[in-house]
Length: 152
Image (cartoon, rainbow, N blue to C red; front, side, top):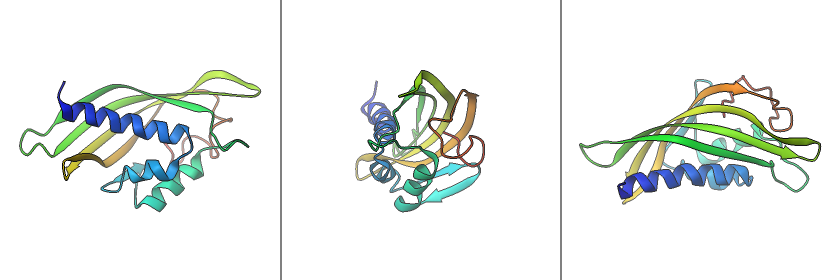
């Protein structure tokens, strides 16, 4: 496996780690060279991206969402022309457990990501939330009904 692919995998995992620990500002820094697309709307800028996630995710008194996002089946394609661009299609599974809400799968979906290498480091250029494939009980996780402009 190439170093570039490992670095891109690490970006995928940094994102879910930051979201699952309510570090939305840290997650948004991963998009300093890019944007997220949710429900057809393109969101750019660290503050706007972090605000989007804050509008979706329920936090508990300890400040945490009590979730685990699992990113699986990442299919990375490196651009052979300049080596500075890549694309990845992956799937996500969201688990959650809280007091009174037993551990369960809340939802599953897909991401379509584009990456760019800047000064030797990979960054998200774009994350498209492709949608939710399977939905369970999202009441303990989402602040808004799943479906509107939030997709994962």
